[in-house]
Length: 246
Ligand code: SAM
Image (cartoon, rainbow, N blue to C red; front, side):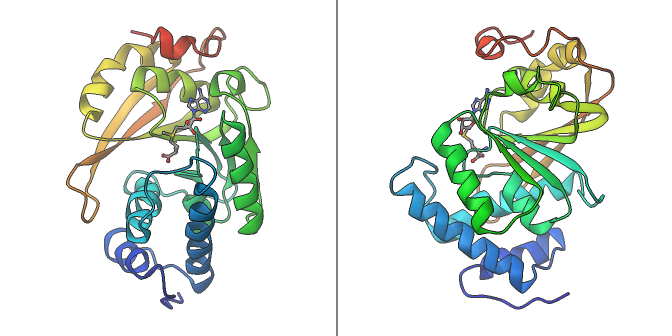
């Protein structure tokens, strides 16, 4: 595979090669460079990220999003992936850049962020990406989305018992949910045990992740969808956060 280094994403290209055995093509490097530029441009007027230093964008946004590969390699053609609370596109968009054959849905409740996602995916020329400007609780009760995804992802959206009620209704039986978490992951996973059971899920594994230059250990919480989620879940918007299943 081509491994040309384009100025601006050198660290990302090298680290992906060393840590995840991924070689970015020249086009993918161009896409990440354009992504970073667009993120900073929009961040000047829309609150998208507190991380604005180029090397930190590469590590804490792009590389972190791609650490999914430590748990799941989304290589199957047409794999249906949903990213809930996508914000500025993390983790879904970096995954789509590297795995262009996935069918990606980005669910984002805030209108301005959804506008950014539309603009971003159009500018990067990404096909098979849908931006849905709604709450996860609404999507989870919509037949167009309910139990339609092979892989349901979220980073930095809610505590695990609440997040389970966002993700599991979207995931098909036999699929997986992955939550990107910080050091609280083991505790959050334990707290969500009953919520997972109620919603048809089961904890598969906790994968510790070390990012270069980041002191905190991060984790991927991987959940298997074992049986269909009861119809009453997700509850009305706001209720999963206000009264998490316990
Ligand atoms: N996932 C991105 C990341 O890691 O950079 C964004 C994280 S940001 C802290 C949380 C995002 O989740 C916000 O953009 C917010 O609007 C969105 N969000 C929170 N609750 C949501 C819900 N119930 N449904 C859809 N989006 C939600």
